[in-house]
Amino acid sequence: MIKGMLTVGAWTMASRILGFARDMLIAAILGAGPVADAFFVALKLPNLFRRLFGEGAFNAAFVPEFAGLLATEGPATARQFARESFGVMTFWLLGVTILGEIAMPGVIHVLAPGFSADPAKFALAVTLTRITFPYLILICLAALVSGILNGMERYTAAAASYVVFNVVSIAAMLWLTPYTPTAGHALSWGVTVSGVAQLGLLMWAAHRGGMGLGIPRPRMTPRVRLLLRRMAPGLLGAGVTQLNLAVDVVIASLLPAGTVSLLYYADRVQQLPLGVIGTAVGTALLPTLSRQVRAGEADNANDTLNRAIEYTLVLTLPASLALVISAYPIMWTLFGRGAFSIDSARLASQALAAYGLGLPAFVLVKVFAPGFFARGDTATPVKIGVAAVALNLSLNVALMVPLRHVGPAMATSIAAIFNAGALAFVLQRRGYFRPDALLNRRVVRMMLATTAMGLVVFIAENRLFATATTDMHRLLSLAALIAIGMLTYVVATQITGAYDLREIPRRLARRRLRGAEGSAINPAPTQETPS
Image (cartoon, rainbow, N blue to C red):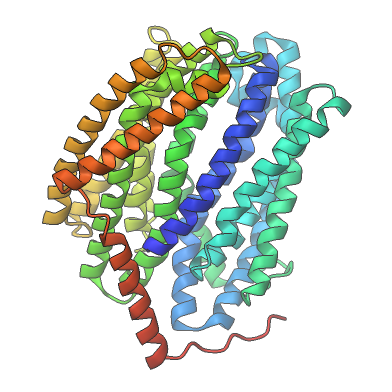
């Protein structure tokens, strides 16, 4: 599991860094104005489906079944199931895409009702979303192929595909903008083209791994019916965080112009630790838990869940506090140029601090949910997810007037804390999760180490940014602040005993030894040549 987490985490980090470069360009060119608002709404809709399928419902239903078939019945049966799923999903997603294109004005009325007060802004949002909407079918099919690769423990191509998205988006913004009405149009075309590139890369990787798919005729086989039944509740349960963010857009569209953009930029910053840690842990955890549950290894499954929580908290606790303390210098350094003013940076930093409070909970949802999915239970997370969405909506309405742009971010964080806590409570009640002594002891020590880091970062921030007046000076100051924070936290974890850095290479060494012994005892079967 650790090796998979490191692979996914490294590629996700590369993608996030490129994503920051893209967002810095967007902020400089579009700022936080009407064109930016329209583009971010256009990006939100297909991205919502991407995250629901790629990180939620599809993985929750598909990966355990595929991994189980691969382990028990071999590559041929697993490949047949993958092909059947690909055919049905292609047919269904094509229908959704066509309907979405036709009904786009109504969709925008629901997703961004506040845009209706400005006909030009509303029309632009409809146009840009129609350009980006085909990305839905491309990226959802890419998620299916990623699930195949993850089920085979081939994490590299699936994680690297998101790098392609950012590379194509940057290229479109730089080279296509002069030939389109606005930079928003160029960015929207870049989104759809990137979907073609991502799906192509993953199909190639699957073919090389012996899982060539083609485009088969859709057939509702018993396994596909089971997949769809498990996906239906998972669409809400696993993707509740994304639905909460969609609610944020609805509420933000009713607030002053630019609020959608402010929330987008703040969310993008908190997505760095959320994406790197949450996606890595969730992606690597589900196949491992699925195999252990299928084999009846309850103690091993509980240990895996405890260690996943441990890895999550040791990284997210300091990241959360750092985002709260240093929100303003982060936003001003990353985006403060061109059309993005110092006032925009100040407002966006307030939203970032609110998102930062919920960061550990956002990631823990991705850890606890696989505890249900590995057992074929997608209904329980849905019930909890519905309650979390209702709570988020209620808080959004209550906070939108007094807190304005901070309200949606704060509501989302509180809903995530409720979601993670409820999932953990139910897992524990059912006996699927028992916090062990090692986890309890280390969590307390992590909190001590995080507090020490926070004090040092607060003092260093005031000194480093007191005279930072140029872009380069701010960038160097932020890099120094990050380095100081990381070094302080690493030293503090070793002093308090929150984590032993020597444990990771030891675990990787044990994993390689078990793999070598398993290969010697049970040689891997030769994969059939894909037809």
